[in-house]
Image (cartoon, rainbow, N blue to C red; front, side, top):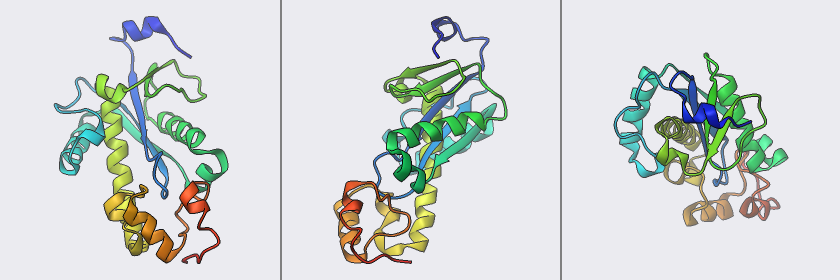
Length: 202
């Protein structure tokens, strides 16, 4: 659902930004964050990928402390394999918005697709660059997912999740060849699919 009038004049609206991270990796959940800011975004908020890890962490803390409310939603590896990554990403976004303690009157979504939900919403391509509230959500999602991949590295240290966060780098592909497919790998993704006949780690 879209409402141009609300988007043009949203000064009285509760505007949530939502973004996801983790569509491209071969392992781990896809994570979305939603946030309603309480005033202006902290200085420096932009697309999370353009920031250093340290800067992201500092901004995430400022966003969490200053926001009216924020939340994180996810779709699991099993849901990604069952639904496909696009539908799983939209599901994670919906869960993030539904989990906000204050429900928004308008949702700004990064990208060109909207989840199936009852909210007034607008999809904005590269919205994490043009809309600070989406940039804030992008940062929260990225920081959350990176922390989860660091935790997975402790459980499955051979794959290098602490370095590539599950993305298909050459080091990750080499580790897959050597170690086989772990329980946190996405079996529907091509490189993983091709290795399913190999050994599986517990």
